[in-house]
Every structure is written in structure tokens, then in C-alpha cells.
Amino acid sequence: MVHATTTKTVAMRVLEFPGPDAVPGVCLVEARPVKDPAGGERLVWVHSLDTRNDLGSLLIPFQLAAKAADLGLCVYSPQEQQLEWLGGAPALATLFPETTVSLSSVVRRVHPDDRGALRRLVRSTADSSPRIRLRFLTEHDGWHILACEACRVRLGYGGPERVFGMIHDETKREARRRRALAALSGSAPTRSPSSPPP
View 1: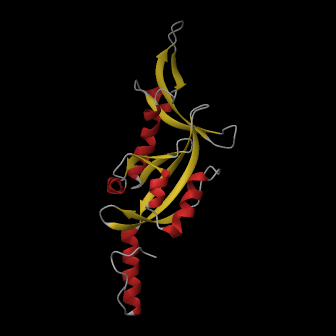
View 2 (view 1 turned 180 degrees about the vertical axis):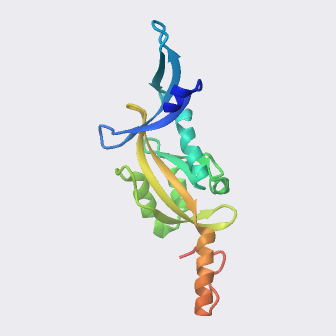
View 3 (view 1 turned 30 degrees about the vertical axis):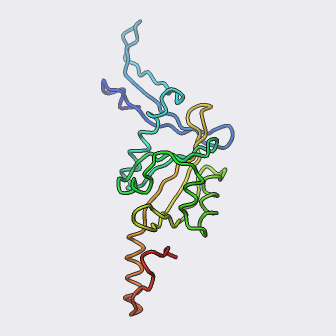
């Protein structure tokens, strides 16, 4: 907000605040320089954008941060049980060819041994989760190993509750690790390309 006091531009920041039900709230705060009509003094006008009218603006900072960190970003709506892909790392976009999918369709593409962890991740009432690893079957290039974290927030004052998911594709890293272990043990990996990674 200091930026708005020293320039003529509009400054926008995401502000997190404690929520009444233990779920933190986030809002997009806008600040712009104004002059006091009475005395001509320079002031800063600050207000929170109403997420019911401008939810897209609130999501932009999250999308930019995810892309900078090479993460995929999705948001889960507990009420509709829908998962929406918000972007982030371009390489991860191929994992979710549809922008909005049901949670059940995502669960079906997760390895059976990892489905319980995914359900616990999106249904947790905690404001943040530990990192989990999932084996995820893609439509074009088989199994991927995804590291996922989630945080539960309320969008704006009294707004809807959402679960933000951050995703990192660790498939190539895991393949390098397996090759290194195989080289150390003097044996080649025996897993076939079509079988799910352990």
C-alpha cells in the first residue's frame, strides 16, 4: 500500500485475515492516491473488492505466484464438489485438459492406493495440509507422480469457501532418482513404461 502513497498508480494486494470459523479469509485490497477535497491533502483510498462481483481479480495474484514457482494451481469447491484448473506452470496444463471437472472424475484417475490421501486432502478442515504424493494417470503419456498441497480459505468477507491446491510434477525427478539407484546397485530398472510407478 506504500506504493500507492508515492505514485499515481493503483496498488492491489491480497490480504489474509483470520476468519470467524477458523478458516482464514483472503481479499483483494485496492489502494489509490486521492486528494482531500477540503484541504487538498494527499490521502490513500483503500477498499476491498467484493469477490462476489470480481472473483477473477482475486485469483490473478495466486495464478502469477503459482506460475513463478513452477506449480500448477487448482481450486476445489466443497459445495459443488468441482475442481477448477486455474493454470500456473504451462507444463502441468496437459494434466487437466478440461477447465472444470468433478472431484469423482479426478479420483478415478488417481492410483487406487492414493485415492484416500486425495480425499483427505480436499476434505480436510485444516487451513493448510501436509504435502502428499499421488500417482496420476494422464490421457496421453501415462502415469505421473504429483506432489500436492492444499490450503482452505474463504474468499472475501463472508464469501464462499474454497480449497486451493498447489501441484508439482515430480515424474522426471523420480525417474532420475530411480536411474541413479539402479546405477548404484548395478541393475537396470525393471518397471515397464505402462505400469504405475510404486
